[in-house]
Length: 438
Image 1: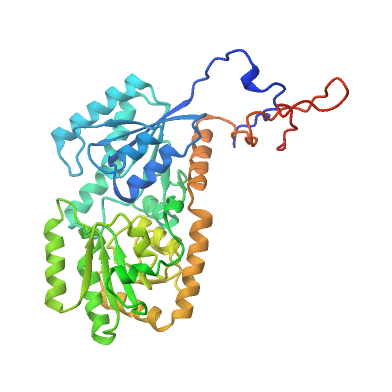
Image 2: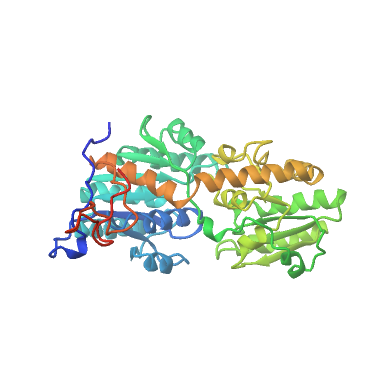
């Protein structure tokens, strides 16, 4: 049950005309994430920058490196490098990272610690328990234990996740199937998981095709264009994309293919292998590397392909749908919660280039149906995956855990006050407006 408390009445006097008032303490929230990059990093960035600044003081702690730190600082977020945080299991560094976090949590006395991703979730929850942080939340973006691992490694990750499942007061999942999987895998207790759509920055995503894109790529205006956008890493299965392209090219040589994105330091070898595979198969895939205008290119695709072997929800899927593109995505984790076959796109079997090729070819052969699926996907994402939806849900969650009432609706201007009459019975200046929201 939510806290019941009366709302705030209209102002009698504008705040700027009052004597100095004491600044009331805000809810201090620390977001802990392994690497401040990618889809989970983008989610964390919005979770920190778009919360009500009058209500929350937000921090982010992660391993150094990545493009999102400056955006966070510009958004008023306090940032901390955890120098010993590592993506892979490294017992000595993991212990040192935990000590760094404990010291930070004890020094700053956070009200809420919100952890993200498996590694930071494991270390962060332990640190929060040692530091006696009153409220701990963890978000499942994707799972460390997935089908691409050996059985022994998968079980090791599951056991580690299960060992800390009692160390959070509430869990957040980015999609319903992710929530269900967390409970089924026994890494979250039943009844303690809430689903919050993972927001994307909709203002940065065009919802119409830029016709200059094909010209810039050296293509004719009427060339069918199939592509994907994302880092060239094993999770995104770039080899399956290239092999899918080869199958389509054999039947539809007029179709062009583009892959936007670059590799990480760890996956540079996979990037080279992907280029070699395209040459071996004789398929003309255009590799653009990193492009700062990737959303603009994605919005020009006739079919957007997401061949991932595992995802949480898939930020690439969400962004593609926000641009109105027909989507073909592998049916992994939470992706089927967003891509409804025949409604907002088509699904394919993970690790199966022929399944991807079949779905892409169907959309190319049915352009009107593909267009309508793209429009419905765009409407679905733009109405439910904005920052205000996600941050409103997190505000509700934090408030419920802390026993706080829902925040009062804000008036359009700070000067909204109760209407008062002047000497002749008329209303006074603009400082005295009738509050429009009850």
